[in-house]
Image 1 (cartoon, rainbow, N blue to C red):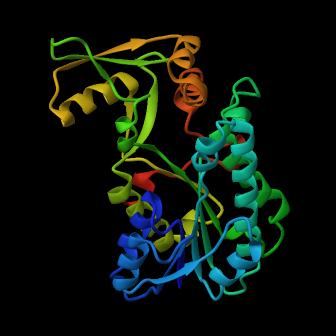
Image 2 (image 1 turned 120 degrees about the vertical axis):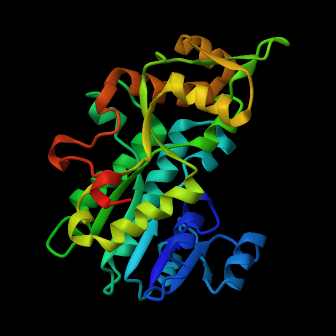
Length: 305
């Protein structure tokens, strides 16, 4: 039994699609509202849909009952949108992640826990750069390793899954290149050098499920390890060019701007995303790595994706 949290979202729906026709698995989707259009559509495809609240461990206990595999994720940006407070959003996501992990640790039938996370900007930069939506997930990693890391604990059953940059992020205003007059040229302005590399998952709804399926099929390799769900590593400049090719626009010109200017343009969103890009730029090749004690991060080649 594979239980998928956030079943109607981008990541969860990709996992369900990857396992939907696998006769070895029953699927249970977890959502806040089983009456939503997306939840009903999944139920009509044979997915058992249940409601749970990540703030309520009791509801998670019921949702996880008899699970052999669990895909778990949290959402930083929902509380961020409502509060525009990165601190409040970080705290909410950390609490939800702990609740999920504690509930999973109580499931006697559990064999494999796949936790959707991101690199720890704070740890990897030695505390110089703190990116709340990354660090909140990494705090959950640390909780699993320390509080649930004993013999037979959740840590040994967990695949820590880094999910790369979504291609769909380019649709958001703060990421989308801007047209320059009527010249069929576009400016792609971000607070990092154009050569800065980033791991890209591409179309998350199509690609993420393949990584999770591969991780589940290779538990001896992936449990207790970090996996990066990325199909390629691109420079930010190339990300902009790829957007232009896909959108059929004219030339896309990359321009680095300062973090302060990016914040002036986009407010709290500019701060959150700008710090992420500053981290990517300063860490270079290490910006999608785990801590030294966690070993090398497995990629698509290791999993045969």
